[in-house]
Length: 381
Image (cartoon, helix red, strand yellow):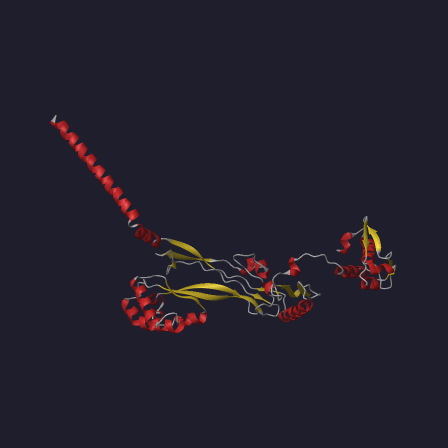
């Protein structure tokens, strides 16, 4: 009986200890999830790494006369890594006053003392991504690298440099619509869109680490895949002719207060487009290249196409300037449909090519085209 009681006691004791252990584990889990959630989340974030794209340098766009129409200008986002192991307290204290002065002198968004206090606080907190400058050009970057602290070197100075690109057109609005844009929130347009596969290149990769606060910082010394820059392209646009074309078109649409106008200048021998301009009226009654009317808008060719018809007839030797055709007083039937000219043409019967073109006779050109190309419609094309 005593043996049995002793065994039961041991079983109850072990069971009780297991229950206490289970309660302790659940309590610890609750404590971690509730009271130390921020700490462990921050620690987990700090151990997170990922690869990010390093954008390739976009190729340039040139005119036929070697003028730069579009290029990518680099700008730099600068931060300071105050947790860098190479940055000792001695190095920081020796440079903090001078650095605060340089920041005040160049940025002027705080006092010298204010900048110094910010730097000291960031150093105490071991901030790894302290913002210094969001949009530095290359000349400013070269200057900043000579500032106190940063001139100590890449690791001792803690300067983090991230390169970005901004697309610019050195000649402003000139041929702006033709050159085009690559946009995040709108349709890409122009040569930038048409030649994107050549211009954009191949992005590289950089390894970054996520630190507290959700910032991603490049890992120093980590392997990086270098980007492959895009190709340059040379267009047929002649910048001098483009300027003349745009100026002339602007005079015309302004004089006649047209809703829009377009002009294309083509080299006849090669078919190369030397200039293309598009101007549309905007709200304040001024004009802007708001749409590529020459390419994107479909309209009936109208009387302009009569010239193409006569050129084909003369080129193929079907008619001469002395020939004439019966316009039947500006009225004729084609494919079961009645075709007429404007009322003032009804006085004429026989028309030479010159007279027919001068009065813009639809019937005359239609009769000649039907007579010589009616059985071979592809020939006129």
